[in-house]
Length: 345
Image (cartoon, rainbow, N blue to C red; front, top):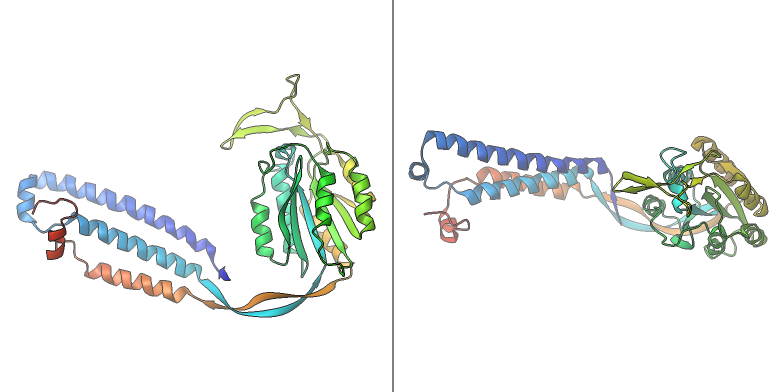
């Protein structure tokens, strides 16, 4: 197991691109200046040991040293000790609507990104709870099995998009049925399912399924994303708007938040409905809901001790920089024999 402490320093790798452009400019400038000074034959006589390969090699060494310095600043850490850690919490599963209607931009930046922001903020405020993620559109699919790994949950969450399911629709019923298979601890008293959607249920009968889930001890809470006024569904290519979705009569499709459906599902599932337009209010409400629930103690294995590894990358960078200092740009005997760039000797 490893950790990256300061990932922002990976941006320093762009320095290599800047360095490459600078070296290219310098080479072209030298050639231009040398042409004005003397013809090529005379230059070869003046500097017979000038090596093109050495220039390229020095650039490669300098680039590698910058790469290693960037990694050293990121400070990768390796887990060295695993312990059984006691935690207490509830099992929380998020079912996120990834149908095309979630691309509507009636709520900024669009419904699917708003849904992911909501779940991300909720996860940030969970303490000891196990997390699972489901995606659904025309069908439901497991995105992340229930786990205590918050980092993995965020990673899978960020990768969710409306292209994950080929069949379109909003199968809330299937999402609830799939969620029932997630709760693998029979002794867990509190099992919670959050459905984040615009409420456009094309499958129907989700209320009956929610009632059956509630009988099994699963409480269902719904969060609505979108507005009652609604908006068109954009069709984009490479981030550029091409058109808006139209129906069989060539009329622009307007998708609207269906709070009534979400409210009925929540009531049937022994839960409550929340409008997701205000992230802070939703997060506070979820915290309040979970804090009132009984927590179950369970053990999980995790790394509790991490050791810094930056020193190895720093040492490598320093060795390369020292090598660069002693590496001259003139030809050496072994390079003359290799003649990698077909240079005239």
